Amino acid sequence: MSEIIIEAENIKKVFSGVVAIEGIDFELRKGEVHALMGENGAGKSTLSKIIAGIYQADGGQMKVGGKVESFSSVREAVDHGVSIVTQEFSLLPDLSIMENIFLADPGYYKHRFLQDKKAMERETRSLLQLFGMENSIDPRAKISQLSVAQMQVIEILKAVSTQAQVIILDEPTASLSVKEIAILFDIVRKLKAEGVAFIIVSHKINEIYEISDRITVLRDGRLILKGVETAGLAQSELIKAMVGREVQDLYGAGASAARLDWRNEPVAFEARDITDQNGYTRGISFQVRRGEIAGFSGLVGAGRTELMRAIFQADPRRGGEVLVEGQRVTGKSIRSSVSAGLGFVPEDRKTEGLIQELSVLKNIGLAKLADRGGAVLNSRAEEADCEEMIRRMEIKTANIDLLVKSLSGGNQQKVLLAKWILLEPKVLIIDEPTRGVDIGAKSDIYAILRSLAAQGMAIILVSSEIPEVMGVCDTIYVMKEGRVTAVLPAGEATEETIGYYSTIGGDGT
Image (cartoon, rainbow, N blue to C red):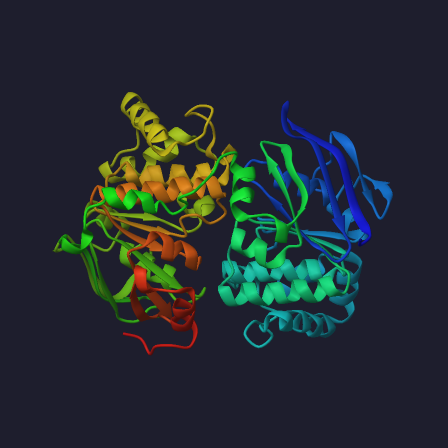
């Protein structure tokens, strides 16, 4: 058995009188990948941040290398060989990539910054080479110039640069393409072979089974499974441990019988020759029928999000037109799109979808308020709408006046969905519907989308998760380099086929 390098015993953490985790035991062995699983709010990130020195435990003890430790800061944890990549990026947007990477070691950064910036640049290129990005990204470029996926890579490289013996990855693949995930896992395996240990927090069960050696499960701040061998744990048992119930129909296929046959329905949405202002998408046309769920798959950077933003006019488009139920959308604003019957759930709920410092009530009512004009909510009507959407979407919140930032990721996503569903759009565009969402909330969201389709809503879904596209959608559009390279009936699509058309197949249509 490998050496135990981190051992946590009876860990407890309390926030404002509320117990977040209690009685948690956890151990990490040298050269292993240990997955920390559970629904949003289960306590995974809390435990990870205690190990990494971001939080200090209110009970229990932790041993590192057999010695009792209690890190008072991230710096202290790094000094002891423990590094973390959190969901919330800690990059400084106005500094360069190389400056951000070497800020992880202030002494080294000061030496290089003051005396040898060329060496910093050279070593940053060497790190970028791990992801094959040494020629596509300039180490001197500012963080503000990068995509979300590129920022995620830089966060991972920061951790690698510290020469840590323990690296904690909290939702590391949420913004990465299939290709980037494969590269990341290759890096993890390489470092693992050198004795580096990893704690991975993720909701992506297929990835956990691919990369992890053992699994620990938390639920509601309590330990449910401790260090179970991944190979011996059935996925159904893992899901049951995470959510406390069996999830037998994750993608809501059982609801299909209640759906109308969308093939016989009229066209609800049509995009004609759409080209966005920056040329990420070029001349794309497609139709979606009433009650149909159309999925868009492809690698990060394929142009899926840019296409949807251009359709909704969240960003200007260079050419093309959009029709809803045969009527051309006039005007060049988001309001004109909403008035025509379009709804849009963006991929980044925290910065684009919701206002974190506002309540659940105000967030759910915002789109309706904007659509009808004015600046004052009719409190009685809005409260009734909010209560109805909370019931309908099964949003878990103590009350409607709670700040939305206090909710779990899954419940925030439901609030964002509720905000647009309240408008009863004819066509709903939803970009990355379950990013950073736990398995239980995923199941709920899929059921909601199936229900909306059953009522006749046309849905356009963008997802980086191929199983999600295959499980939820009726028709799958595969994109590569700003063009649609394949249109596949969901029943005939395979992961291999979608992967082929995302990377090397097709010249575009």
